[in-house]
Picture (cartoon, rainbow, N blue to C red):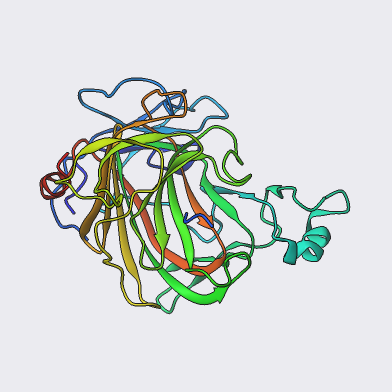
Length: 326
């Protein structure tokens, strides 16, 4: 990656750059300045001629900011305290009702979402031998780890690997998680747990698939079997689009995942290979979907994430843009 050509902003005393199966590129990228904004452009507005990366904390106006030097590989979204995230816990499976009643209180009823907070300790951190922070997602209950900020025009990179444990209702299914992006609106819009959004699927042998959660749509090039193929016809769609090929690492090894988002377009990259691209993303009301929060899913499987970083972009790397036909 090249050095950032412009400073980014410190927001709210923390340095920020402004993510489901149901049932490393090396190209140079042009980088844009970061702009702190009071209003999140999560579901309104047309694509800008020169998109600007935006950082928004929706619950309060942006405070005064001071420029600081940006690291060459972007800003880390991962610290030991998960200070840049919040957790929304969904409905515990019936097999966890006794534990749920103990953790959620006597007023909790089966079938209810747990709400904001992480009483099940679904998202925790540890350190590897070198001291690097690892995000451990145990998957016992469906939940979303959600950024406090909304994002637009960025490159998100991370590494993920599977552990062994699986939990109901996915005991006999593939291990599953996901990176939700352009998330907006209330928690729990989809399955009483995740927000309306797009999803870069993280699932055994299916990493890179696209899902549209609770209403959004996008235009993709798909075969008759709904497999992404840049040579296939393009049309709007609201269902699953299958990645072009499996480029995941073997079980138990780290897989590199990159998500490039520019306006209403996005490219999914797995271990350096473009596996899916989309354009003309729209929200459930048919308006351009150009920004939103990122969520990491707890979805019935034990897994780990590390090196979660984000940086601004003003264009796609040329090799990826060509491969994606965007």
